[in-house]
Structure formats: structure tokens, C-alpha cells
Length: 491
Ligand code: BES
Ligand code: MN
Ligand code: ZN
Image 1 (tube, rainbow, N blue to C red):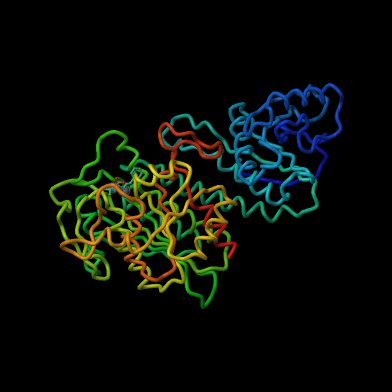
Image 2: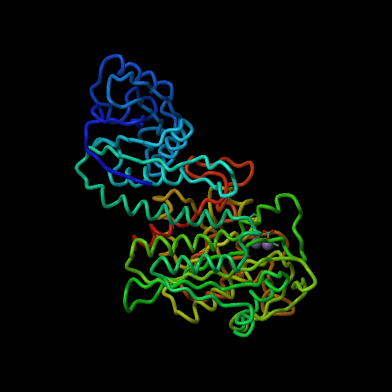
């Protein structure tokens, strides 16, 4: 997507679509210039029609009174509640509308007197338009959307140009994560995922290592080996390394990539099983983060680890009742083969901590249906053993609009996954605190390393029947990429 900033007078701008934000109960959009009476009236009317409600849109034709062909008014909600997210949602709406109209040019006015800093508003507007312009059409004969060009008419004195490339690189990371996460399970198995990681590394400034089935077995990755043994698509461990700062401990980011989760011998019901192609979303988020961090040359060291398996039932599958040895030696009793994510994450976390002694660890996983029950589809579960990290994450979450809610963890929960026959078991008692007992399993792998766990079961893709945001089209959302990029940039 091409993005430009200009400081020309909107009245003089020749464009297909001159766009303005309007807040609730206002008859005048932000940055309305002096215009001919008739046009002025038309714009006031359009503002009334939208009522300033977030995302509602009205189009005014200019009849060649000014060089712009039409004016688009988009509601941005109550004036005192205008945040990054409102700009992102409204900008996403403009992108959707102009694309439906077959336009390829958006010219958005961000005046000096807008309630947010010009830089902040510009960043969110670019994200909104860029992210809304993606759709997964790889298997459609007629590709409908072409990415629009965006011109920001920013009259303020703040220098906006340097945030343009940043916003674009971050959005590209999100779209990259989505485009892999959306692939069907016959097109993206662990081996394919590994080859995507390899070509990403070859194009970016990243080092990529892949561990194969036999290497995993031989090195003691008992969790990944057990979950992967039921599928003819062999498991892989994908490792990506980025160094942007000499002599500092890295941050470890781990992501669950089950390319398809049938549940295994503890088979899932058929209804919506297709959505379990999205069980690789945590891993895809890691790929998106690595791409964007390398693209921005951030001064950090980052290790991304993606355990990838296909969880299938069959004659060679692991079973309920099996006792396995996880990476590092801890024994785990399997009581449900559908609780597979924690097993592969345990191995990846233990290996990452042992190999890289990271200063902190973050993981992303579509881990539990219980998380959707608790928080719904707009908020991810957050579990952490470190107050500072959790607080920084919550601040990054507020800026990026990727919402999280922290759940507790303590020794009571650790007790709930102690096993009668092994050290730990892969499910807690009954259905209580399902998201936390899953996290407690991971806590056994991270020990005292500062750690934050994201359960993205509800937020990783737009679930059938749930309402999508203007900038999150159908399919995978790439949740977490923008949040972590913000987190890493604001230590
Ligand atoms: N990938 C699923 C969790 C999931 C389910 C995410 C639906 C998004 C939508 C995970 O592997 C799983 O099956 N978890 C089980 C755990 C249970 C057996 C303790 C679950 O949540 O039912
Ligand atoms: Mn499962
Ligand atoms: Zn799963």
C-alpha cells in the first residue's frame, strides 16, 4: 500500500475521495475547510445522517465545485472517547466503503485540532486502512480487492513521515501472519509451515533452524513427539533468531502451531471442526512478529520458537493413559489427547529457556475453549508470573486495541494438575478454571523466568457468528503482532 502525507489545503486537493471524521452530536467534521454554501450544507446533512456513530458513513458529491470528486464523512463516536482504536475502526470502514465503490484512492484529513496527536492518529489510520484492505482470496477466481493508496492531509506541524514506514511494516507483519494462518490444513502442515519460516528468514535478517521428527525424538522432545506421532505429516520445531543488540539476553517468543487439531483419540465433535485449521495461529503470530521486528531493525534480541504438529487419531496416535517424558525430563500423564497444545508448548518453552537463557518469555496459543467461555471473542486471556511485564502488556494492549484480561495463577492451580501416576497431568479436574490449569501446565516449564502467556482461542480468528471489526476481515486476525511490536518498542 502506498501512503503519503501532504499538507495541501483539502479544498485544492484533486482526489477520488476526500474523507473527514465527524464526532457524535456534531454537524461539522474535523478539519472542515471554507467551502461553497451548497457543499457546506451537503456536508452538514451528511454529518447528521451518520450521527457521528462509530463507523457510519455518508457520501457527498461535490459536483466539481472543488477538485475532489466526492466527500466521505465517517463517524468516529463521542468526542471525549476518541482513542487509537476509534480511528483504526473508522479508517477501516473508509477502506471497506471505498473498495465496495471501486475506488482506489483515499485522502483522509487529519487536522491540527484533532483530539489525538497527529502522529498517533496517522498511525492508527494507516493500520486501519491497511488491515481492512486484506482479504483471503487465494482460492477465489476473481480477486476482489486491490489495495488503495492513502494520502493523509495532515495540517499539523508534527512530522508524520517517519511513522508511515513503521505503521506499514507492522501492518505487513499482521497480514503475513493472517495469510499463513488462513491456509487450509491440506495446504499448510508442519513441513510447509517450516518452509514458510525458512523463506521468511532468507528474505529478512533472520536465522532459521528446523528440528525434524527424528531429531526431536532423539533430543527428548517427548510432548511434540507424542502429539505428532498420529499423523503422517511429521512434527517440526521451527526456530527463528533475530539479533539487533549485541551482548544482551534475548526475549523468547513461543507460538502454538497445531496445523489441524482433530482432538486425536479424544476426538472432537464434527461441528466446526474445520475451524481447527486456526489452531496454528499462535505460531503465525510469532512469524508475523519476527518479520516486523526484522523489518524495523529493532534494537532487541529475539528468539521465536514454533512447535508444529498435526493432532490426528489413528493406529499410531498417543492415547489417554499414556505417560510421557517432556523436554527436560518431567513426566506427564495424558488424560485427554485434545489437550495437546500445552504438551508441545512445554517442550518448546523448556528448550528455549535452557538453550537461550532469555530475560523474559512470551507465548501465544489458541489453548482453551474455556477462554472463549470466560472472555468471549474480543479479549485474550493473559496469565503471567511477573507484575512488571503484565503491566507493560496491558498498556500496550490499550494502545493497540488488542484487548487482554489477566487471570490469576497460584499454587492452588498448580495442585490441580498434579497426577496420581506421573508428576503432572494434561487436564485439570472437571471443567473448572480450564484456561488457568492449562497455563499452570506451562508454568511448570517456565519456572522463575519472567513470563506472559496469551490464550488467543477467542481472538485469533473471527468465529462464525461473531461480529468482526472493520479492520479484521473474515478469517485469522493476526492477534498479538501489533501488541508485541508496541510492547517491544516501549520498554
Ligand atoms: N485448540 C483447542 C482449543 C480451542 C477450542 C481453541 C475451540 C479455539 C476454539 C485445544 O487444543 C483444546 O482442544 N483444548 C481443550 C482442552 C480440554 C481437553 C482440557 C478444550 O478447550 O476443550
Ligand atoms: Mn485440542
Ligand atoms: Zn488445540
